[in-house]
Length: 99
Image 1 (cartoon, one colour):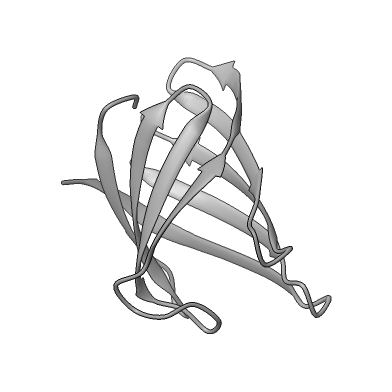
Image 2: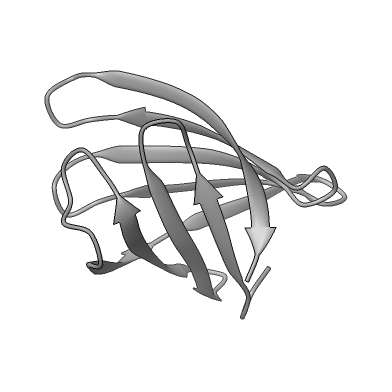
C-alpha cells in the first residue's frame, strides 16, 4: 500500500488515501461533515498487519478526531471506525479503489 493512492467513498464522507510511508498518510477530502472539500491533511499513522493483505491503520487528526481502519486489500474494502471530537462514533464500510 505504501506509495499508492486509494479512493474510499463511505455513505457520509469520501477521501483519497495516499500512503506516503509506513508512518505517514495524506488524505484528501472529497466530502466530509467537518473538513472542507479539496483540503489535504497529513497524519502520523500506525500500521499493524493482521494477516496477508489485511492491516489495522490508525491515527488522530489535528481536530482531535480518532480514526481506525481495517484495510482489506484482498477484498478491496475498508472498514472505518471514527470517534469525532464531539463524541459521535461513526462506523462505515466502503470499497477500496486504487487510483
